[in-house]
Image (tube, rainbow, N blue to C red):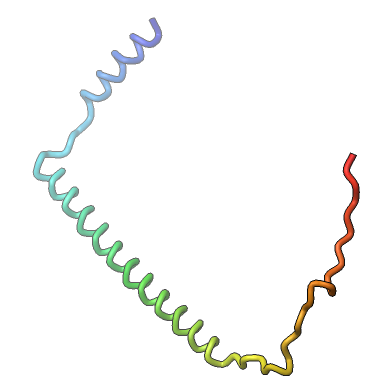
Length: 89
């Protein structure tokens, strides 16, 4: 019974609403679409700019690293590795 009363009251309240005209709704819709497209374009341009900036920074940092010489390399032989195991129960 409360649900039916609620629905009736909701219908009455919706009848009191001043709805926009068709032309107003279309204008607002077009405005929202245009603003969304501009914002998406802005975000896309910022994304591309930041991506290229990070790539350039990584490339620049990578070119500054010095490769280790052969005298600095470490040779590991299988006998150098010690493994200790614990029996499971």
